[in-house]
Image (cartoon, rainbow, N blue to C red):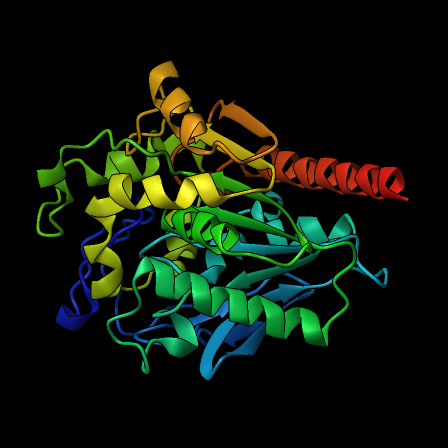
Length: 337
């Protein structure tokens, strides 16, 4: 889960990925060098890691923004497309509280192109899509953005889609209707199928216990995480929020159509999703067409895995999964000769 008050209200109450205090109108870092403007509603300039740059893509007439990091080698081993959760933006994958937490820099250093998209309704598309898009429409837009990117950039052996929280749902939906052979696999975190939260607690006007559910113990995160994450916070669009409670129904139609390897990561302190054996078995059972499913329970991690001390471990495992998908693809190609 990664949810904020709907966009139309302009009020932010987080139910998922982020829960950061309301910001003053000016941050102490706004005049610092090395900052990029985070396009979209109410975004402050954000600092980027070395080698990371902002990009925009035309997704069938919708402009999506994002962050891009490319390796020194050409072509890359593959492309990792990272999809953030609700109530945050692409900066989630380029955490600034410690150098170890950025997926963008780690992936590029290991030979991968990493593209973290601002999903529809966030960043550059926020003004044109003030209500955002529902899950199936988001998947269509994201697929168009990936196609535009890979048409203009070297993509190596294919694309792995990595999603967190609500972005994991979009990742599944993207994969479910992906008919090109270039999709290597899907890696998701912060998302199950059965909510561990009563449906009434999804009301964005309820705030009790949200900080604990979003983060878990605060010592799981580097110092300055909350200050440095202020520019990562965004408003969750209304159409996106309206689909949250319907994931059980939607997933029953989406998950069986995923036909590539899948990796599932549950944080030790994940509080939004059921992660007991029967919960995981239910999720895996719906991924009936996936040729391989890997399940990892990550210690010393809260819901926002990619911003915590465990981020590097998670990202390395995700990239190792990408390597396994590459190996499997190459092996299959040799057998087909």
